[in-house]
Length: 114
Image (cartoon, rainbow, N blue to C red; front, side):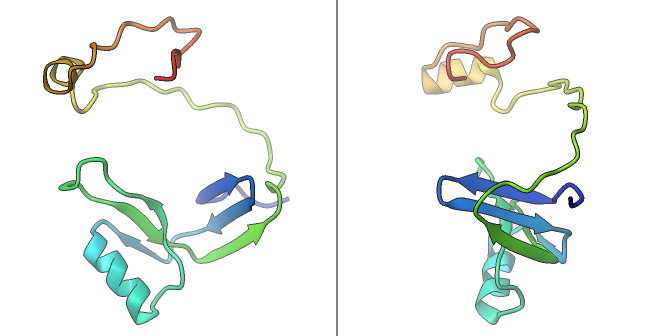
């Protein structure tokens, strides 16, 4: 059994598990330079939805590719509270033509594919 990982990406062809953070890259140019120079062989994380926002990319200390998910200790789910949405529901409705989000029952936080 291993400690909870820093990053996991799993799909039908296997799983990538990354541990620790060797370097963080909030900007795409820095991440690209690290890959091109060979400072890191791999980056994991997320790109911003707002192209002007910071990325959340990192070079992990270690990583491995496996056929299945590793076995991790079970932990209780974290409590989550949504403080704000970007864009706001109102601006999404006016700018994108999609309806503002409806209040969701606390038992079912994700419905209708949203």
